[in-house]
Structure formats: structure tokens, C-alpha cells
Length: 290
Image (cartoon, rainbow, N blue to C red; front, side):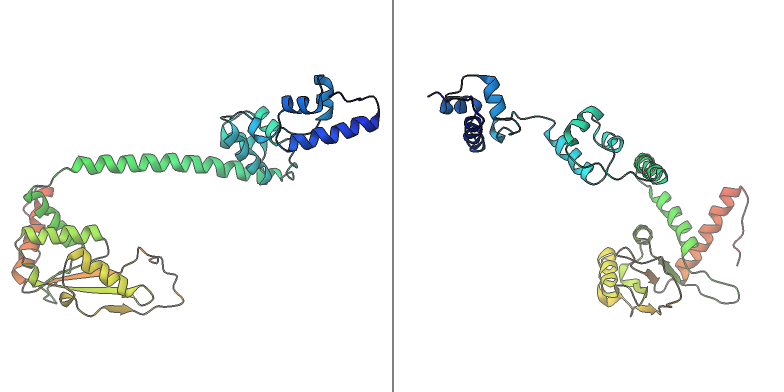
């Protein structure tokens, strides 16, 4: 059928029909057929300002970027920041967000701070990646340990972290204290190398009373594989409210104490071996200090 469009009343009535059909999801071709309109200029005027239904839009690879750009703009980001974040052109950003309100202009010092923060985030990620590559390369360089290498490592480890005998206070017992799980595992492997029976080992925990004591006890029991009967009663360190502790959080599990019973002869061997290492390193005959 044919509609007259010569008067304002006829045009507005026709526009209402056209907009209603458009909002129902009809295409331009179907609207033309329904309303009997064959002039594209007239149809354009009737549908002016009315967006097409979603189903008529072709999928666009940039739709995700567009949505992200609009989200960032609503959070107050500038074109420069959005471009740096998404890697798209400013012209595209401008087109996508032109209907959104402009963010409040920031103080230049704040702009500089935000830019510096962005650069630091990038540089920090690069440095962390390099740090991890260096550590991994060093780990691979170690390779498997021979029995001799493990023996010398254990001696040095004990002399750094174990209790020592003094001329004025004889303590020829092997007692090792550390909070690092790796140190504990290497020390236990070293004792195994020396043929020390695990039944001769006793364990104790030193930990702040404000920590997760039960969780720490379970952790060390699992790590060492020792029965709970091999553990002494946990020693709790009193918390001083005036002290700001750094060893807090889930990673804090106190210090584990490993004591070897009937270990006087083992201690003497450790001390002698240590001074053997010192003498070999210095190229001299280093006598046992006691």
C-alpha cells in the first residue's frame, strides 16, 4: 500500500509505525514492504536516530576492545592510558567512547604519578621475569650431588646453623635449628647419608604464641615424616605488643629444632671435618680449635 507523506501529521504517524517495527527487530527491507515505502531517503528520515537491532550487526573482532575501552573511560581513564592499555588507536577510542562523559581533568602531578606507576608495573614484571630465569638457570647448573658433595654441604650447613661446643661449656651434642624447609630437608638427607637412624632424632618447635601453632606442628611433622611422639612440647615465645614482627602470615611456621641423641662422636666428626674444609680452602693445615 502507499502512504502520503506530504503533511507533518502523515510523516509523524508513519515515523511512529517505522520506529515501532524497527524496535520489534524488523530489517529495513521488511519495514519498506510493510509500510509500502520505496524511497531510501524517506526511510532514512523515518528511522533517523533509531539504532538497528542487535541481530543485524555483523560480529566484530574489536567488540571486546570497544567494551573494555568504554569501561575504562567510565573509570576516568584518558585516551593515552586507554591506548597504552589496549594497544588500539586513539581514533578508534574516540569513536567508541564519544557518547560518554569526559572524565574530570586530573592535576598534572597526579597524571605524572599514574604514568610512573604504569611504567613501574611494566619494569617490575620484566625484572621479576629476569630474576626467575637466573634462579632457574642456577638451579639446573647444580645437577645431582655426589655423596662427598652432600657430606661437605652438610658439614658447612651444620657449622653455620647448629649448636657448637665451647671450651668453657662442653656441649658435644648435635642440635640443628632452622626455619627454612629446604635447610631442614638437606640436613635430614645428610644425616641419612651418615647412617644416623631416624629413631635417634627428636624434634621441637619454637614459635610465637600468636601464630598458628597447631598448623605449624602439622606442617613440620608432615615435612620430616616423623611421628608426633618424636616431638617435644612446643616452646611458645611470648608476644611483645611493642615489637613489630616481620615473621607473620601463613608462611610463618616458627623454627624447627632437630636433636640427635647419643651424638658426641658425630659432633666431633663434624667439627673435625669443618676444620678440614677450612684448611683445604686456605691451603693450610688448620688444627681443630679444641
